[in-house]
Image 1 (cartoon, rainbow, N blue to C red):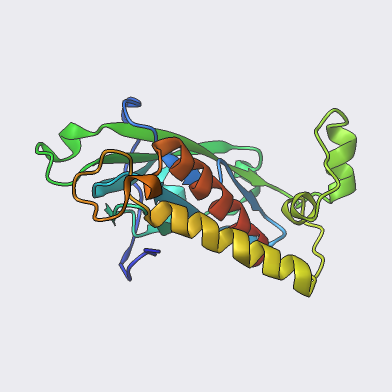
Image 2: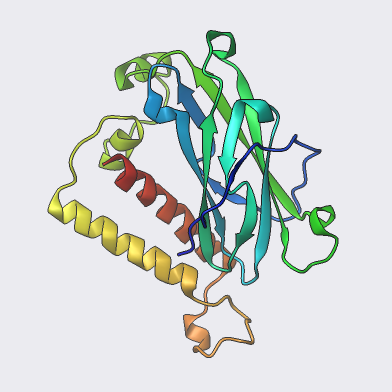
Length: 222
């Protein structure tokens, strides 16, 4: 699975009008920075490419002076993903509660026209908070929120528990299956040497990419 190649840190560019002809798959869907938690100053966006062609991307922002982005532009190979590291550079009280916006734009490699040929984009809100809330406080503010009693949910809410060997093995197995699905060719791909029975649809690849993103967050927080 492709990951971000070493690159210079750079500031994001301003955000132009939105484009959405091609779906763009970025995880997580929002970024939260907390003034009292220095580990949250650095956040990772994972961009997935479930399509059988190379995509170029560029990250822009409504507040480029407040953030530094590593690998703010580059390529994502077919059926791969890349990590884009963002850092908040201005943790001051005047910005508490401010929601900025990142935009990830994509276009086909070699499609002609450079960024003028952008075929898809997705906006990611980024908010600076004064303190990191506890899970009980979140539940009190949002009593109607869906709260399944799963280990995955508790990890995403910040309640860290060690993974049992059985659960860890299950997560690894599911992750390998999702990765295999991402590597399989799409239906109708004439370049594939595999049997048509082993071809998958775009929807199946998107589901696999989403599952892989969730598992990545679980392992990072474990």
